[in-house]
Length: 275
Image (cartoon, rainbow, N blue to C red):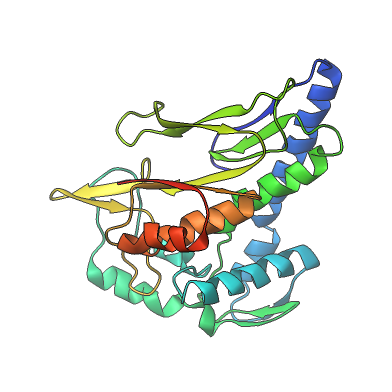
């Protein structure tokens, strides 16, 4: 998951708690091994190295690709799982290494879900194109792990790199206390949220950015231009029933730039935005 992951369990039975943690960890490892673009030999690697050949995918991958297609339509092309090739130009490591316009322009022909031929279970990318499910994978892993843990106990909170879900309150009915990280003080909380049940997902540029000539470049890229989204909040946290839904809303709102808050208000969800 490329981030710290934890499972908090409010149970007196240590054996049960260890079983819960092991179940969640195993599912997180399974999802990462299957969907990470960095793992050779998995379904994503098969797709990305197909060189224009048609790949037949399994049911789980097909459902995620259907979801990605829906997000592409809902976002008017702003959420695009083929935009991962832009990472060849962008390295959000806190440095001042902003790529040239020519480098970005050369990659744009490899971006665009509308160029993909997708009819489940068959997927065909143009040669050189790739898909990257990182924009939905971590939240999906949380929900999948939660579904397996729920029959064992609902007094749990799963937190995969800040995307989290509470199956229910702690023993005694106490809510979980969750901190939203400060923009300026790493590890400090800018906001504390009490969560009894449901999910929170955060998207922003607190840790992934570039800065050059006084301008900050956040890691949320507009796949149409190849450049970071302008005038977006530095961080948005969204509450929703599932982690997948919360993550989707947080990302779609950031892709709207200056209209992020208006977009979330129109969805009728609870959110916290920091600029």
